[in-house]
Image 1: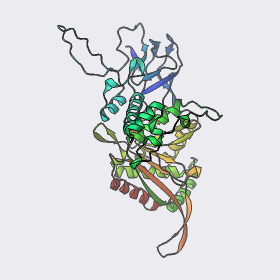
Image 2: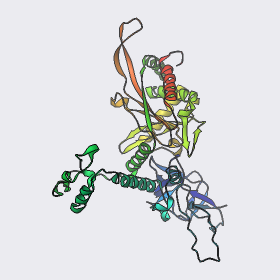
Image 3: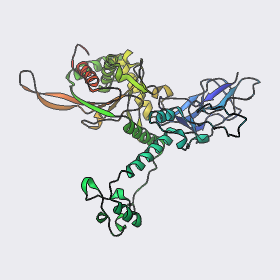
Image 4: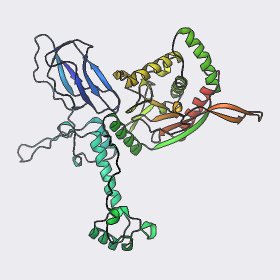
Length: 436
């Protein structure tokens, strides 16, 4: 039986994968589970294994090609098999409009559009026919929708510039952009006197000397994803101060046990993952995603932990964290962090995350807010542990280790009270010895 080789989907928001290399050539023998080709996504460069044993045939994507997910890119043939009339390799989406043969009317061609782009178009009430697709075979991608939306906003803003008719006429004569001027009239309205006699003030200046680094690969993907998240997701942030005294005592004891067992030491992040998993189980809206007009409460609790790389950021995932013990979380965390920095992650390591933790404490950052990693609905930002002098119940001043944690949530899904209750449980979990 002919086995299709498809571009895999490694994360919920992934649209495409870029072919980096083929480990096998057309006509070569390949075994199931053997490395077949390498792809690059916005998160990772990774080897993909062969889905079957046989002869590699019908390679449809070459090195450098950006291919939509689920697209057939090659085939694995069994003994004596040949390729015959295989399915098309692109998802075709669009209205099925019947054509009356008795009228001289051209059929309306279907629009090629990626699933994520279709969701964005529907959510923002955008006409697909107004967008020009830049993907393979003219497919409309997420980036095309973002560009169209940004251009629409720009045009809308330009139309809202407050200016007198005379000012608009003078600006048009001199080729001056009114958006660059500060009006002196009521509510910033621009008068003709606000426009300089010449447009020399608006002459472009030469850029300063320096190095130019292309915004591409992982860095470009991160930029696009963060812009999309910040522009389309209403963020709301909540910060709590957590006393880490009990965590520090528990960690000391755990590391004595770790040394006895011959395993790596437990980190603060491992405790945070454990506490977050426990809290998410009690507050499922924090472990959800917004799909069209429905809130999808996810059953699995898969916690991503952001890892800084030289060229960007990657978020490997600890799957089913709520079912793991402390040492299991710690070992898994050490493993995926090490693999991330050595570019040895496999698809499962970066897929299906439901909540993200970003810890900048090791860099000395005391407090910060993070941008939600779509399609998730929340992210937790952790600062450095600081020794602070605070009064105890008797009014005595004592020094305690305090950390600031900031939760950013999607306000479409999560209200303030839900987020506050989640943080209260998280704080209780980390401060109370009996819960730890």
